[in-house]
Length: 115
Image (tube, rainbow, N blue to C red; front, side, top):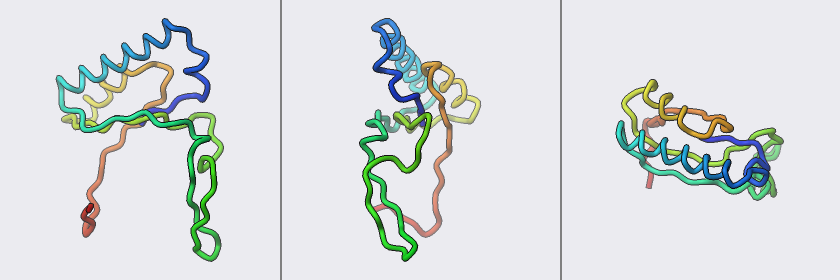
């Protein structure tokens, strides 16, 4: 997952924006050479989120906006298949230095099959 500071893109000049693109392309080439990209996407700003919480009675309550107030927000993700954590770290280091990158393995939940 890739986190960023809101407004960062809007304040960036053309050269900085081009560097973001170049860094993403370097990351993608590295992953393609060492594993494979499964999926990726940019996400809209958290202010456009819809959040579903449960009230004290367990009933779902739908609200506009993010789950919590955050200084950073998730801006996108890459789902990749790489051989080990060291390779994933090497790939993540290629992304724009303004990002906070969180690496997590996927898990299989016994008894659950996706439909």
